[in-house]
Length: 365
Ligand code: 1CP
Image (cartoon, rainbow, N blue to C red):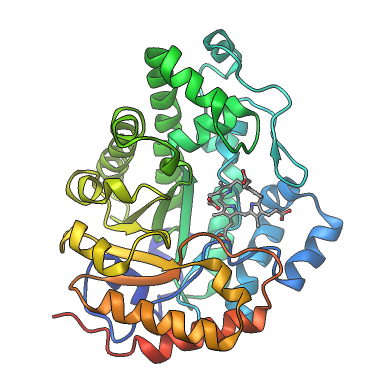
């Protein structure tokens, strides 16, 4: 099966909004939509380890499709079930999930970079993701587009050095400030793997690509522009040129630099992405003012509103729709970060219904 003979796409709202085009309503999906809040997800996880699911295309496909099947005609995208940490694994590091990410042997000093594989054959190491994407794309049968993704170099660098999640990122920041040149070299090395991985995902059937820089907000504006931003540009530039050179579809690209609202102007102007994801710490009107009409926006309801009941959800969605509609440019409705465990799946359904109801006049011409 090649990209050319996948089943035809029946719902292109996401792709049109990502390109800044007019849409009859805002497309909607949520980050981590195939996750622990879903009983059918937890059921699969009872008998399969997290990375086993990622590495088994039948299971990854099944889980990717769960929210699409639960919310027919309400959801406008699927995102392949995987994790950002498959890149450190492909680079030769061991990563466990118990229940958060844990690296038994993190990078402590720049000497440890020698422990990484000198050359990463992404096509081989991450073939299981490519196979899952192709299988999912076939089984989706064109119902909604499929999103591929990777972690941004700064966020992956932080995990590889911290050895897991961290509140302060003390170890990763020690690297930045004590070994800036070695840090930049490692960040670029990760960025090159990201490029191969994203291009491979399009080759396998991904129709939009999202880069997650979940820890961008931990950096000062200066450090973000010094350490993270150049790698994000490296990724967008090289992915686009490689897609063109290989005659692959020129899919839209989204950057979610969580917490980097201070950098929205710079990102819209110079990062080379079609869509910028935003968290809930910035008002949509202000975000649109900062980015102008250069990019589409994605976001941004606080995921915790989903714990607040139907009235709270409806009021927040209405406000969000009004905010994003106030300006020109495409908008993809989403949460401002991943959906959290414990949300009632029926409350998420209500979120989708409210987006459909309040964004119906989302026409920017
Ligand atoms: O046991 C489980 O099932 C754990 C929960 C879980 C899930 C559902 C993890 C562990 N990863 C995932 C899937 C996942 N991760 C997806 C799948 C597609 C989707 O439905 O959205 C995606 C896109 C990710 C991306 C990811 N993983 C990010 C970036 C987005 C974000 O939330 O900021 C990050 C930071 C990770 C690392 C990670 N993986 C899992 C957890 C619990 C974490 C975060 C841990 C931490 O706080 O440091």
